[in-house]
Image 1: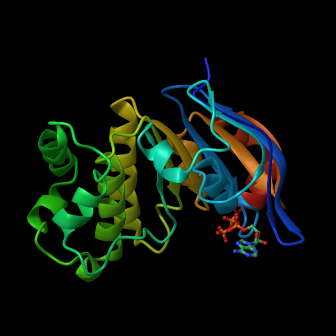
Image 2 (image 1 turned 135 degrees about the horizontal axis):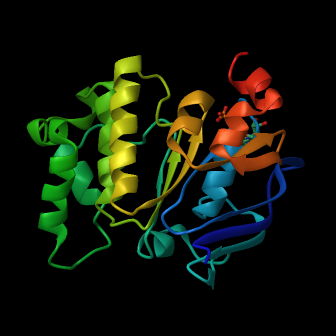
Length: 234
Ligand code: ATP
């Protein structure tokens, strides 16, 4: 069974093709990474999957064609993107940012989900009345993840969660990502820190100049001389 599948996905910016007809598939419960250099097309891929960018090719999610659906329709189907640079609302409080993650919901479980997010990310509870713009980079990353969790995602697309964070904070953020995966959320992780990505994920894709050049189990990628030379600094 497949939760998300892209076939011949292509993203163009004017005359430039940033994603050149890639195919990928993710099963429920998997944690998969997409690694590659700056400008390889990773962010464009995630945005296209979340329908935040127009693309050609086919995308199936939960057995349904989603190419023609708007982004908000995917959020209510449980597909959430945590963007590169976090995208928190700087002038809203932590609690208000978390509320925004549930804006499309009107069920009775929002409050209990908020408590679950606070349990997973206790720092957010401590800082719930603070303006998001005054949080540290790591705290903002936690907030962006917490906000996505408020939408009850089945599939979480994470774009560069380690970007700009101190090593200790990177470690904490990845612990949280592991906890989320352990709760059964399927994850597609874009990371420049390939070493870390291959440690936490079971499978990965290597992207170069808009194409997927290698797809394999994480262990095999970590042992692959091409990956070691290009992405693991060996
Ligand atoms: P990074 O890690 O640096 O974000 P990436 O692998 O995520 O890299 P993308 O951000 O998807 O790569 O960019 C892929 C290519 O598309 C790059 O050559 C980039 O310059 C180009 N690109 C991205 N966004 C735009 C845009 N809005 N307009 C024109 N070109 C763009």
